[in-house]
Image (cartoon, rainbow, N blue to C red):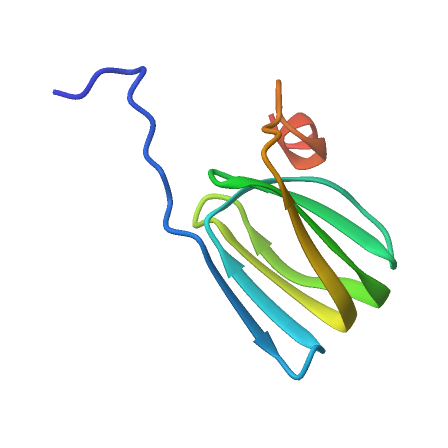
Length: 93
C-alpha cells in the first residue's frame, strides 16, 4: 500500500515542431494563459511559454499533457512551484 503523501513525478518532455507547435508532457497545472504567454507547472519547475498568437489546442491535466500552437519565441523555466494550484485546479474542483 502506498502512503497518501507519496507524490508521483511525471516524466517531462518537450517537443517543438518548427517553433509553431509545442507538445508537453509532465504538466501538473496551467496557471494562466493569453495569446502572448502561457504559464504551466511541471514537477521540474514553472515553465513560461512566450510568443504571439498562442493557443492551447489541448490540455489533459490527468495525463499531464499540453499542446500549444502559435508563434513560439521562448521557453523559460523557474524553480517555483504552485502553492495551492493554478487556474484550472481552482475551476475544476
